[in-house]
Image (tube, rainbow, N blue to C red; front, side, top):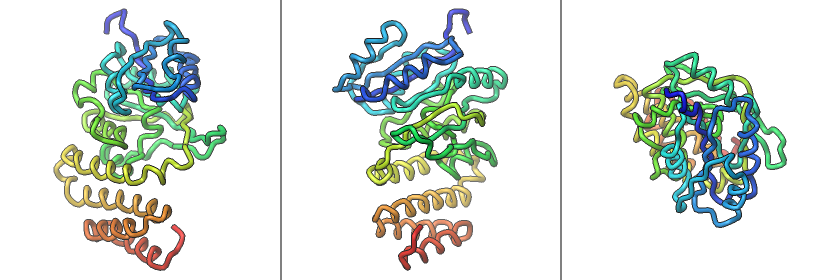
Length: 299
């Protein structure tokens, strides 16, 4: 690392984020760790986002581009980054002041760790805490853990810091995915490097009340694509029954969410598909879901 290199490049993708981006930017500028650059990618916004960004002057770097989606915006930020580490933050989320300090100290101390995150508070639009996204129990390595539970990396796209050199190795965010592009990236990072999670609650993310039901079909399709495309990243011995069980568990998750939002035919099909795919490892789970759905019970 040269003496003039920035330690951390912070990347905030922003599309029509005039209503929230100030809070995200201000939470970065309030960090106790100061050796960072803040790159905000204006992804073709049509509201007042660009005016708000310009009001910060030289405190931030603005990358402006035609609208291309979240992955495209993050990739543009990575391409512009000068930092040793890259940290991501969505425009409607924010950080507590010690977030960068804790993560830089962790990555500096453990070179085998390629990326890290931290425990995260999930907030309502009113600022109330709904839940805590805790650090995962990593079993069999982070890659297998993410296959078992797609949301294992606490805080995901607003909590992860990674070594910049890794993106040259694994590539950028997949711009063909309409959702779960962050899960896809963590799988690829987990295949080539270690992961750690700081148990302190250093991030807060906003949960939109209708986001799950509105985007469920897109999320389901992306989740299945991610599980399929990254199967080859697993060790050969884990690409058979382990992968089928993980895939079936993903189907079970979306079956439950679909059932709760009235998409019951799709939910039943997913349960039957999962049962056929992994009857020994997930049979009890699938049969229990099937029973409850047939009898109209609450899941």
